[in-house]
Length: 110
Image (cartoon, rainbow, N blue to C red; front, side, top):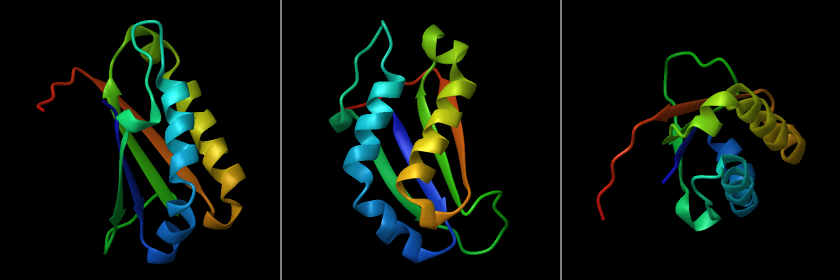
């Protein structure tokens, strides 16, 4: 199932995003659903990662890892841009958001 790491250098950003998580997980489930799989919000893991040092391209960076179903691959850039806009529209105070969708062959253990 998809995993999402949300990176920021300011801890305050996470407070703003925390209340938004259920809505974001549902949006991601809808965007990543394709003919081969229907996702629910409960199937998405989200983690906040505080960045100490280094440099980032945006105030917030989202790294989404999911299986490379052909439908997702065909529209991966569109998915990233739509997620970016969704996060910015719902949290205008967090500033610039960058989104990466890493599509790959995934394994899992339960």
